[in-house]
Length: 222
Image (cartoon, rainbow, N blue to C red; front, side, top):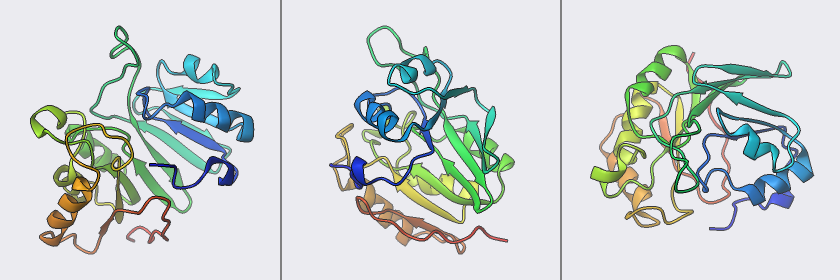
């Protein structure tokens, strides 16, 4: 898929989050263009700063799980656990960290799960952040489940995570862009729609968005 918004049409970018070093999440060509055009701060996980700096970034922060950094008094970014792995070659598996992020702002807290399977870290995050306005949860690259479930949530696990996190709104992500597993381009959305039709989300919402689509996100529950 082409980008939903062309790089040259992006608004000013202050911060870039890099959850792990897999090629579909840390694309060096894209990072170099962002460095030249926006010079943002990059917040990433342990072991990735050297690679990120080589793309032209002057400001890079590495975080371990549960560490945090403040963004000019406007936001707090907390690195949170994920159930995944890392590696860009044959001999560097697990040598850098993988994670998600919670971004806390005056407008509410957003959980970006990164790449992750469903695991005990979901409950840990729910216990620490009890009023999420938005959760961005992966739903794709989940087939075959016996092989992929450890590293990638499918639609059923994403809905389960949505409920455990008590997020006001969740958005399904990580589908329909790269062919990474046995599920087709439309399988994650179709499976999610079927699961949601039989679910009671207790006043919350779970969306998927078209490529480049935007929506207003409701405020978190009081």
